[in-house]
Length: 294
Image 1 (cartoon, helix red, strand yellow):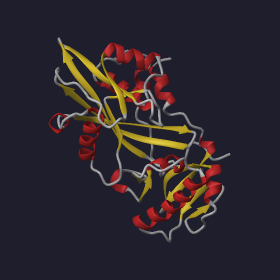
Image 2 (cartoon, one colour):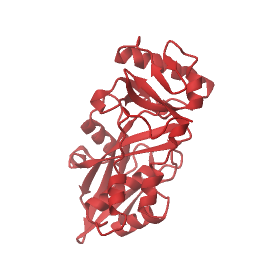
Image 3 (cartoon, helix red, strand yellow):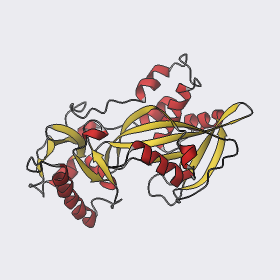
Image 4 (cartoon, helix red, strand yellow):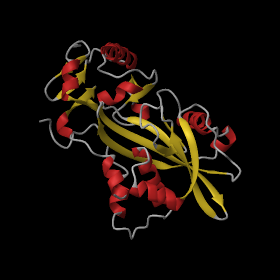
């Protein structure tokens, strides 16, 4: 295995299994063909063909779309088609956060293949001139990726919360980082990925941050999402990403991006250009998928 294998694993899907979801003529997601067939039960909400699923034009406001789809999700959760609810909404957009056309429950988002947004923080510390990295271990009780390694702070960006507000909240909740310390986090760009899961398509944008913490800082478990923290050398973090599947998938990419930005992975690496471009996939859902449904 290697770094490029991690990038490819986060961008593996078969577009022939999906058809587009449209709102006002723009693709905002992908649904599996069998899930599209289920949506045919609600003709007042969805127009379903063998090529796409279109939200009814009669639902012409943000609130009307959100309410109508939410009612469908309620039924599908009760029937067991969708595993449950998170009671946290994600924006549904073909472009940016500001272009959201409706909201959708976080747990239902993969079934509709809508783009999600998150924020991940590389927690760093210098000891004797060496830059080291804090790593979190996810709770073994979590539904998604239990027991996997994680970035020091990582969380989704719900609808209606600003990037700054959410970053500060996640830092406090996940690692007991004070407001004063969390405010030092430096935005360093974004990565994007798209992969196929059992519940559907998962296009994702992750805003990345570097946060250098004082040597006497010790992250503490707060909300139960994490069960342990480790302080590692960059060599150890790089080796675990490269050679194991110990990290949650998207965290591999955040660390690879960090290693590139800090010169740990150099342009002389034969995979360098593929890594750089692979970390930023084209998620423009206004265009057609690579091939049509089969």
